Length: 346
Ligand code: PHE
Image (cartoon, rainbow, N blue to C red):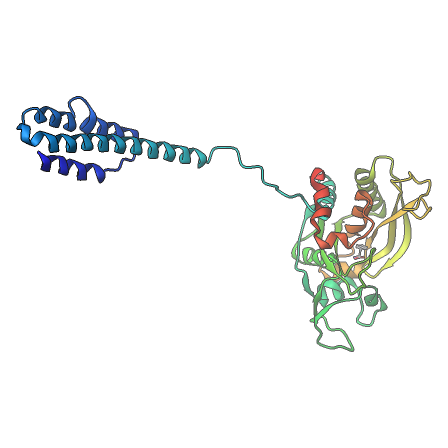
C-alpha cells in the first residue's frame, strides 16, 4: 500500500491543468467520494494493525497533498483567466496622446478642399528638380534677371556662369509641378500643386529657406482674366470669410502676362487698418496672372487655341494670420508646447 501511495504522490506532483474541465477531472479522479484516495482509505481498514500507524500518516499526507495541489491548480487557472481578460483585444484602447495635425498641414488641407470643390485636382512632383522645369520652361531666359528673384539652392550646376537646363536644384516654387502636368496631359487642365519649396534666404521671424506653397493652374479654351478674378474671389471668401474683398495690383512674373498680386481685405480689422495689415486695410496673399503663351508652347500646348491662368501662394503667412503666430520659425522647430495648441483645430 505504501508503494501505491508513493506512486500517487509522484503522479499528482506532475499534474498540470489547462482548463476548468481538467481541474474537475483531477478532483473526481483523486478527491471525490469514489476517487483513488478514498479507495485507499477503504483499503486502509483492511491492513494489519502493525502497518496502520505509518500507512495512516502517509495516507493523510497524500490526501493533504492532493488537496493542496487542487487549490494551487485552481488558483493558477484563476490568474490565467485574469491575465486573458487584460489581454482582451476588444477592450477600448488606452487613452494615448494621439498628437495633432501641424498648423501648416491644416492650412494646406483647407486650401486644397476649397479648390477641390470647384473641380481642381491635386498634383505633386519632385522637390529635387532640374532647371528646365523650375525656370527654362517657365520662360526664365538664361540671363534673365528674374532668376535672381528666387535665390536657388543648386545641387549640381553644370555651367556656373551660364545656367544650363540640366542643372539640378531644389525647386523654388511648385510651378515646376504644373510644367510636368502640362507636359503629361492635354487641356482642359485644372490642378493645384501643394508642396515644400526652398530658397536661399536668411531665416528670420518672417522668412525661412524652406516653406510651403499651393499653386494653381487652369487651362482651357477661352479662359479669361475675369475667370481668374472670380476664382480667386471665391477662394478668398471661403478662406477668410464671406465679406472679404480682393484687389489685384499689377506685378511681374516671367511665366504670366499680365501678372498681378492679390491682396485681401484684412480679416482682423475688417479693412479699417490695424498693426497686422500695417494700417493699409489689405494683406498680400498671392501672385497670379494669365499663363504666358511662351510657357504653353514650351509645354506643347497650342497657345492660339488655349489660354489659362495660374496663381501661387505661400502657406506660412496666411497660417500666421489665422493662428496669430508671430514668428514663422515656430512652424519648423516642432516644439511640443507649440504643436499641442492645434489639437482643437483638427
Ligand atoms: N510661382 C510664383 C512664386 O513662387 C507664384 C505664382 C504662380 C505667380 C503662378 C503667378 C502665377 O512666387
